[in-house]
Amino acid sequence: MKKDKVIFFDTTLRDGEQSPGASLNLKEKILIADQLTILGVDVIEAGFPASSVGDFEAVKTISQKIKTSSIAGLCRSTEKDIKICWDAIKYAKKPRIHIFLATSDLHIEKKLQKTRFEILDMAAKAVKYAKNLCKDVEFSAEDAGRSDINYLCKVVETVIDAGASTVNIPDTVGYTIPVEFGNKISEIKKKVSNIDKAIISVHCHNDLGLAVANSLSAIENGARQVECTVNGIGERAGNASLEELAMALKVKQCYYNITHSIKTKELYNASKLVSRLTGILVQVNKAIVGANAFAHESGIHQDGILKARETYEIMCPTDVGMSESSLVLGKHSGRHAFFKKVKDLGYKLDTQASEKLFKKFKDLSDKKKSIFDEDIIALIEEDSTADNKIFTLEYLNVTSCAGISTATAKVSDKKNDKNKTFQKVTCETACGSGPIDALYKAIDKIVKMDIMLIEFSLRAVSSGEDALGEVFLKVKYKGNLYSGKGTSVDIIEAGAKAYIQALNKAKSFEIKKEK
Figure 1 (cartoon, helix red, strand yellow):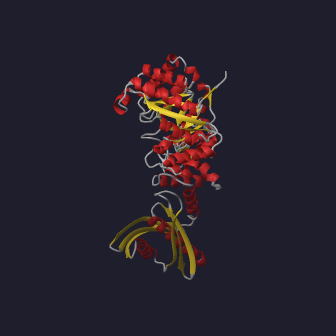
Figure 2 (cartoon, one colour):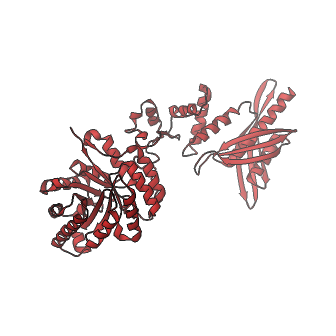
Figure 3 (cartoon, one colour):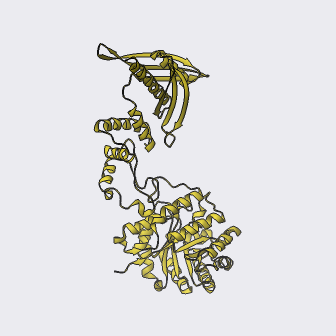
């Protein structure tokens, strides 16, 4: 059975730019237009030429530059608007004049203050005038979602007779639901006698979060052009999302039996470009192109993905231009994902060491929302220096006020006496010029070693507000230098760990030297 094709009409540069704060300059519009052609968009609505001199120049420049996609310009149903639109798009290899006029009683009476008959006459005259200038004319029945179906069918029939090759049925305010909107398209196909001479298009808004669902329902009932935007940007809650429509038709191809020209591997690139240039961020849980679209934190899901990707993914990340699925390590992650990450980082650990590290990872994941590669490496390296511990930090508390800091530290000291090992736990408090100074002085009281701090540095080893901090320091003890490194989401704790590690190295060396 031969597959029908759905035409993708992108209005990112027109309706998308109407998003508050999303204004684009000429250079930015050209960058997006170029990406849309790479993406395989059939029709690019480049702007509303009569709305401003800047928009006219942008549409004109894009018309001169783009040679593959059709270039459309939007205009009202007046000869002046139509002529300005044509002057902007006439340089295109495949130009299209896109006329709109409201057809709902609410818009006709309240906004336009006209009658149904007057609207019908205006629509016919506008399309005839445009047809004399351009062979490709599209007519949009604004607010068709709330228009009387019999009157809407009369308007559609009239504009097709006047020369419209595409008739657009917009759900301008996102009012309809999928079954309702699909039935409206079905009724138009049944009642409009000349509908076979035109392509039915739909332009759905997302006020109820149904723009994509309504568009798919329309396709199922005979629409063969969808008007959409990259990332779904647009007026109010936005438009139908291009990437969601393209992937829905691809993933459910066996159901729709429809093809399209969108190169889905370019979806992610297009999304990033539009987000960067408009300044409108893509929500992390956005379908297809969101940061979490192919990310898994649940241990059950991660285990399934590692065994067979299809268990929890209905499409490959490479299908949309992403590199690979992401197994996000966090408090919900299980052993399979964690040990795979350790292996991927190049570490080989025995069972005991792995289990010990997994416990530390779980403890850290309770403090951090996400665990990054750097966090895992820091845990491994910290654990590798934990052998032959003499001093262990059991507790710390630091307070600072008016330039004076007070710290309390509790440290256990491993003692050997007559081949027996026992722990001596000591708690001390000290004041200092800062929290680290006070803490180290409290520890010094406990260990009773003549230690001199030579170097101290702090850096973030991972990303985010809750990044893991790493303290690196050097101390001098009896003429020798010893280094220490500590990591924690709390930089005071990281500093304590680094100091204790350096003390352990110094004390271990002293004991070995005595033996």
